Image (tube, rainbow, N blue to C red):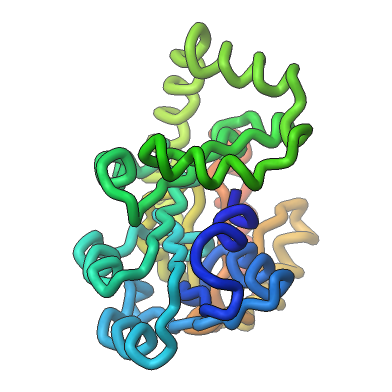
Length: 268
């Protein structure tokens, strides 16, 4: 769907706008199609730099913008007014709500009413990644035009049937799982914050960032020795010494917390 939008919206000679760091597929799809990438760094608080975005719009005149909401890998939802302000400049706006179930925040009403906004969602973050099912939500006439680019065999029939069943008959199972993740996210963030030297960043997703005084690569390696795998994101802008951890089941989260305590004690 990201690729279809990158093909469908605007001329291929017009740039694609997005903040960084964010989900890398926006840039990958733009590169594959030869479109210029306009990457605008987030502020130090990891929210959108509206002034910089507006300058980029004025200078580069992008026709398409992607906003991950909540953002991957920072976990936060950007300011709604900032996204709308960029859209006011005539930029077709894609709001990628892959982690919507964990934030409850959405641009769905805009996508259903406006011709310059679409929403993307996926089943991959709620335990059904193997189905490879994504969803684009838009006004009917907009969806119809984008659908002209869709390949005829992009999603298998079994994936469609299973997705339909999960979103209808078995949706309470998804809701129960999401609520467990939300409870565990708050517990995990709270307890990790109590470890000396660790800073935890706010999150609306099923993961969150944390920062230690030590090189992220070193902490990452020590956690692997403890049998715990997190993601080193310290190579990204504004994320020095930062790692990203996904919220798991309670016993997995306990193992992570115990490993972090041992690693921090070892490195201090």
